[in-house]
Length: 319
Image 1 (cartoon, rainbow, N blue to C red):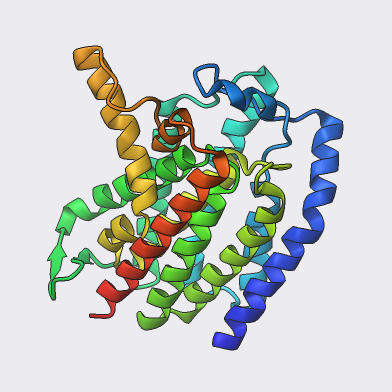
Image 2 (spheres, rainbow, N blue to C red):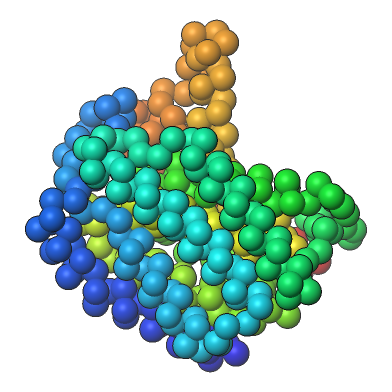
């Protein structure tokens, strides 16, 4: 199976690397470019118009590569269901931004409603395939917590929180893609230990496609992943954690995503309650930009932090 994972990674990488230039060319021809937040860093204005929705390239590449090597297994089906579902939400969000020429797409309640439906479909699929479990593993401690009837609500929270966290992290060239590659490497190891090699192969394929995408998304980016990419990645992480019973490990492995989301929550709460900001600008990566760090320095430091947390997550699972 290790050989299959290498083939999946390489295949997804090649597909993404080869098709991205054509995608960029067509997006430029259609004038489908990124809309930049008005309240974001001033120096990001130069990114306006950069082709976006790169997830349309690297998500299908990962799916094709993994299916070609594993076929449709129940666990993989569940993961793909959430990945594609979140990707569809992201596509509608991106299309709304492009069609109306604004930085905001779908309304929050529309996204939440869609995730409720997606959660119900995932629970039904897991029940259908005999994979549903209400127990979750606790990192560093040798016991599980049975959530019982609360578990579907917990799954909803995991999917919505993870997809939004990855989306918030996608604010600098290569940041979300690189961090995702690292996290997927950790979950590939966990899936193997959990006896779900087909999920591990999907992790490898998605990491490979993200690596191919990174060729064009690294600074200075020629292509952005868009919400279709970031929400699909977040959905994939959430679904992988659910099928492996490692939802709490996701907090550790995806610590960079978690901190980025928390920085926004704390910033908004503080400003509304006290009128003061805790950091210069949220999400956290913008704070360091405002402190004078170069974009590449912020990204490389966050990648390093992601690698340390991912390693800690794998070690915690293997205890």
